[in-house]
Image 1 (tube, rainbow, N blue to C red):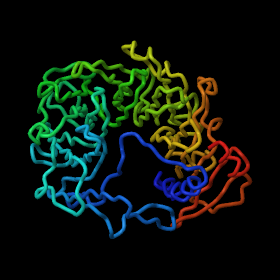
Image 2 (image 1 turned 90 degrees about the vertical axis):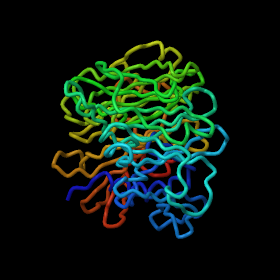
Image 3 (image 1 turned 180 degrees about the vertical axis):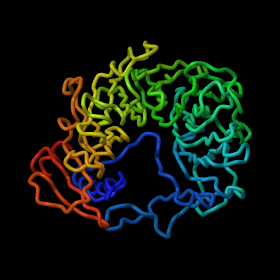
Length: 459
């Protein structure tokens, strides 16, 4: 029976709490801070909890009946709660909450909406029609579904986080251009009253280009990046991440166009809304370059680095084994106007047929270690690497190191210290592997060291 990558998530829920208790792990993840709401079919709800959480036997934290705040959606089929993000939009020191409803049809049919609530939020529960958001952003293009990705980051250095909204499903009404071009909208951080409480995004781009078009709106308070390209779906804004990639003290925004196999860096600037964008292209094949993005400091030199997942990348002889491209951050990176995947400092390659390494990326911070530990998913990996159509999925953990440790091209099998592999077959004794089961699922823990204790020393 086929198992999805959800199996690996169940396995990690079992494994990582025990690792965390020994190594003080904490997790950081680019753009998707909260997964899709299970209540979307009824309009959606966003749940906020502080101390009132419990842990079940699997170690998965769940909200109990003492939930201190529920924000309820009011529009059927709006999918409120599809994505959430937290940041300080007005610079007052309190975290603010953004919630997306990508199927909201208030302004246009499924144009989408993003609701911003300034913190601190009061305890209790309310309907957004009774306690409206401090700012509502509505998508202006029919079917645009804004808010499929969300991110807060201070791109201007003024102490207020910009709200970045991805809309990869945006369809442009121009028959000669992209079918699904996508878009990224950047709302500049501001003090209340925030733009009168409502922003209606433009319905059509002001201009068309070969790859993307940048338009300012509301006097520069909004920057729109329209994803364009002749006769091709590109899904601009599919993933978002941010970090200081050139060491100038400003956060830089990274957004992807995976169907065009390109990733773009918008450099943070004090001269907002004048922006400069660097494009990184994949030169060969259609590898979904940019399906996953992560900005984090891999080599611990004080400058963030960029990792780009390309799950359909095919090393020689290994179709869709996938890969992760690592670009080390440095002060000269922003001097470039374009780069290619071949300019990456490190390429971590998948090692088996259609394992799709790089489908998702995350960073784990470990107390007592100056290096970030990477988590790289490979949802298509099969048992023992055999191409028999039984994808069980896996997650590889790789510890960050100094630059000299990495070779230009390295198979993931040479780098990981721990791999969680889903297993729907009956577990067997395997020296060097731990085994466990949950909810009928069986998984194996593969260590390059012989024991778990030896692996934990790397943490």
